Image (tube, rainbow, N blue to C red; front, side, top):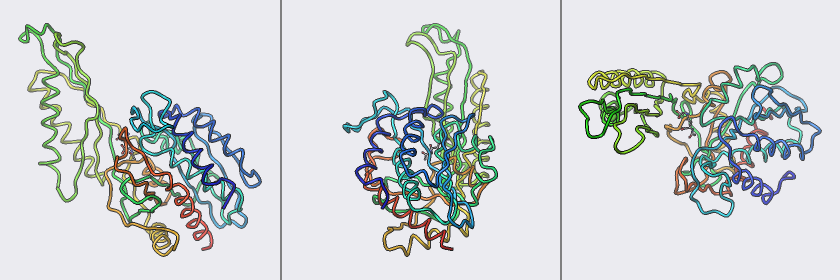
Length: 383
Ligand SMILES: CC(=O)N[C@@H](CCC[C@H](N)C(=O)O)C(=O)O
């Protein structure tokens, strides 16, 4: 294949894994990606930086006889998770980890780019190294900054996410909705602090928060069609300062998921009712903020996805798995609402799940993924 050998790819992945950075702070990652891309054959490449999105990178590959421009997006940010894999190349940044496999995504994208830097594609290609997928909606920010205009607007867009439940290197996809839409939710409950010995003089928001969280559990179980499904997860709860002071405030941060916008709106409406009801019953104030930020359901476009799946099914070098919709979110959903395309999974075969501190994707997925994506793009460009 191209210049980057399997060993070089593994080295790149481990380097990226050691230095994870949070959304919109991916400065070292950006510099490392840029340096790696600059080592590739530059003959057909044009590198673009975005002043107002300084950790993003775009690379244009000039096609030899372009009929279209094909976009390929990878995300580059990490999560506030403390790694517990014990790997020799574990994160060197305390409390931050590539626990969602974006290091695998970036390395795979670099491998595909490296191939086409050496083998000029027929169509134009645009590689988008996107900051802030886990939060801060980097895809939407880029779109709204006007990044995808004129020659930088892909006619179709592709992107992947790794999947620990599929064999390493397998490609998973489905027609229609691949991922859920998500909405971030923050709930602030405001009561009155006081001495632990005199609850009658205070208004305890630890108790109100506990009640609220318990009551929310009835939304999905009692107000959502079980066939359609939905998720509400509160991943963060913050209240109080010390054991013997009654907490006058509580903040609860969570995420809502549904496979359709209608379901998300339904859950949002029920959550507001529950929050207002609990606040009223405790004589507390409540402030609820929702932020969808472009994490729309990831809707794969029919004709393009059909072509992608047909290719993957018949390609002798690709293992294809038809997958069910997943409740993970992706801000690629926003880009796919503006530009037609397909998102797919890359299997990385691990017992630990995405976002866990022990997540350890199989690196053998990288060269296999690169091979399948290169073969798909060549097949697509031959059309
Ligand atoms: C693939 C993946 O894990 N994506 C994230 C996207 C986060 C969406 C948003 N910030 C939220 O928390 O709702 C996920 O958590 O699914």
